[in-house]
Image (tube, rainbow, N blue to C red):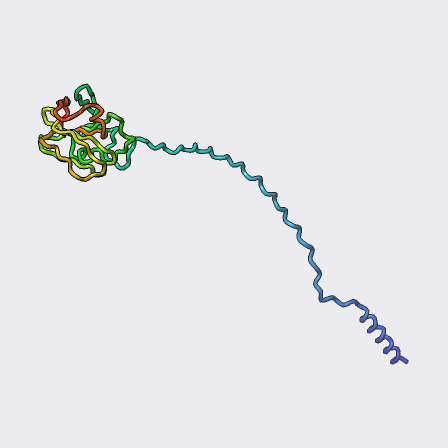
Length: 200
């Protein structure tokens, strides 16, 4: 009877132990951390606009400038040559380089009806001119040291045939073709040239 009691007591004890809840292997979730507050984006700084640069106007081309020439006619010295009743304002070509260029590359619109060019040499010699790179037909007068016109002739544009003076000359006067006839300029007439105009 006592043995039965012990058996009964053991069964009751075992039953009590089996009813004790077992620990779960699932970890207890930790509380979520509080989110860090995010500062609002600062307002963009006001940008001061740069002052607009004034628009530069393109430089206007000088219509009197001839890019093919070394000496611009507007920059040449001038002198007055008097032949009969005609007082001609002439560009002075008084150096080797100026005499070499002469009326080369000039266009007809750069010459007026009475435009003239005076070539001044250091001595009186037989001379000959041609028309290389000269686009405008010309009249040419070879003038002696004493001012007498030795010869007066016509020259064709771009003609490289030499036109001789037919006598010693210290000065040469060129004008647009037809000017000599219109003004009555011819061989034997006297050209009055300022004696201060000399070759350099």
